[in-house]
Length: 103
Image (cartoon, rainbow, N blue to C red):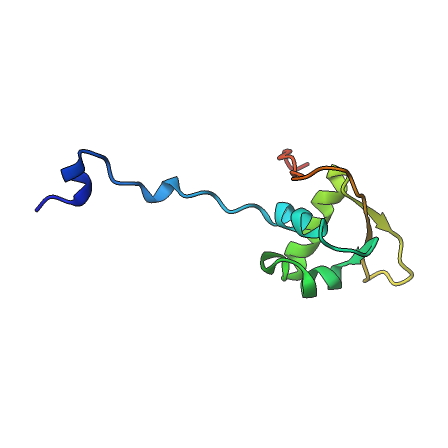
């Protein structure tokens, strides 16, 4: 029995043609555009941020990538285990994180 695609003379869509999921840093950058405060902490990212940035390691890695790209600026805290960043606002509609090789 022929499939619908074979009867129409077309090839079946492949499963690998799906749109790849954006990386956590891109998700965080998109979400930060809606964050109204001028600073953000790692704890706030984990609580209020995108679902894929809820793990501490992922949240900090995504934020550090945004620091390297210039979207966040680190703010020194009195406690060494706290991390806080200032958000750099730029007049862009859809900001994109550049894919740069890890150093």
